Length: 207
Image 1: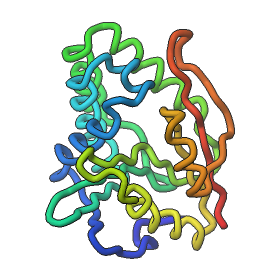
Image 2 (image 1 turned 90 degrees about the vertical axis):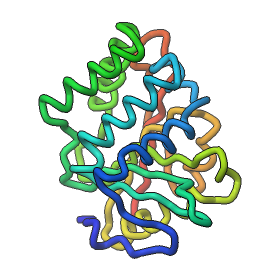
Image 3 (image 1 turned 30 degrees about the vertical axis):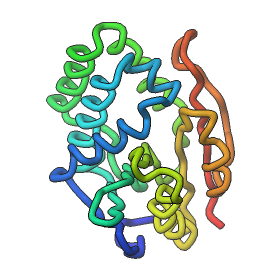
Image 4 (image 1 turned 180 degrees about the vertical axis):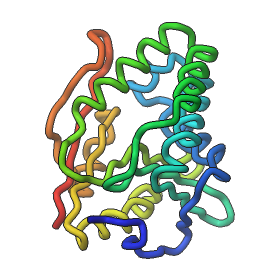
C-alpha cells in the first residue's frame, strides 16, 4: 500500500505541512477561480479561498500529503492528497470552524451547497484503498508549462510501483483531457444538488 516514503523526491517539489496552509489555499483558490462547480458552490472568491484554507488546515496538512512546486523562487503549483489509510475527517472544532467560515463568507446558501457537496463526494468514494487527489492547481502565473503534471507525476509513479489506485473528482469538463492523459478514467457523473454543475469521479488503476 502506498506510503509517503514511497514517493521519490523531485526537483522543485517539496512536501509541506500546516506551516504552508495559506500558500496551499492561495494557489488552489487561484487555480479554481473560474471552475464552474466551485463558482456554483462558493459563490465568490473569498469563501473559496477561506474554505480551502480551512480544509488544508484541518484535514489535508495534518492528515494527508501536501506538496508545493517552486519555479524560479516562487510557489506556482499545489496539490493536496490523502494516502490510503489517511483520515479525511476533521476534529469537531475543525469541522465547526470550516462550516462557520463558509457561512460567514458565503452565506447560508454556500453552507447548504458545501454540505450537499461533501455528502455526495463521500457517498461516491471507492471502498477499496486508494490515493485521493483532492486538488491539484497551478497559479495563474505558472500555467501552460506543465507544472501540474510535474507535481502529481511522482505520486502517480509511486502508485504504479505500489499497486495503488488513484481517485479524484473532476469539477471542470475542460480538465478532463488533462486527467485522461495521466491515466484517469471516468467512473460516474453526479450532481450534489439539482441545480449544480456535475462532478466527475475518475480513477486511475496502477500500471
